[in-house]
Image (cartoon, rainbow, N blue to C red):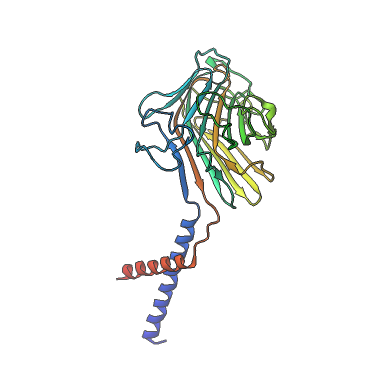
Length: 329
């Protein structure tokens, strides 16, 4: 092979490598790009905007305060308010011995623009960072009274809250976690995933409105929650063909001994692919905690199955070639 032929072959190889790199970069970029719908740290010390009927800034910082906000509604016992600028958002029972429940609800999209896991690989992720104080008023319990739900509220104009209170009975679709909050996990299913199984009913107060699915994500008798320790809930819902992959995990401290409580479940027949509501129902200070501070509430949508157009692939491949030439120079 002549020297000129060797040079030509080397150039072709560089072309091919650069084109491959460009295509790979674009393909990777087209998958897994997260759209942040809500990311609230209560910089403005306000939890009451955007007011109804908007409910959520939905990815646009319309008031320019540095947060992507969703409105929160408080019902039942106690209060729910930011303690000041930059938070945290504090849910507090009226007394450490209260046995009545509280209800904290937010809508992370406008009612007309819910998250729809329509395509294979579409993912919804909810992240909630919280810190409990005065757990069980110093005692222990065996309940599943620390409950939270990720659901779709009917867009009928009447089911969404517009003022403080607990959600009314409605045809919610989705899932909930019924969990035990105690210094030692006392329930036989202390981290249990539930699926909605009634046509209409209250959101979280009636356990009969839900059906246990999968296996429990923590073990009774293991270490539970500690006062003043921050915990992080990450809840993923991913479309998998006609089914739904569900991954619910709380990390922090020595929860469940190793610092992780987690349940994984594939639902082949989910009752909803649309979501817009996150609700929390701590059922009394003596079976949850007197105070629960939230430092971050975040909701993301990740589109799956996005196929880049050929023209875009060619453009990025040429860009990769240009970079390769500059590096050679």
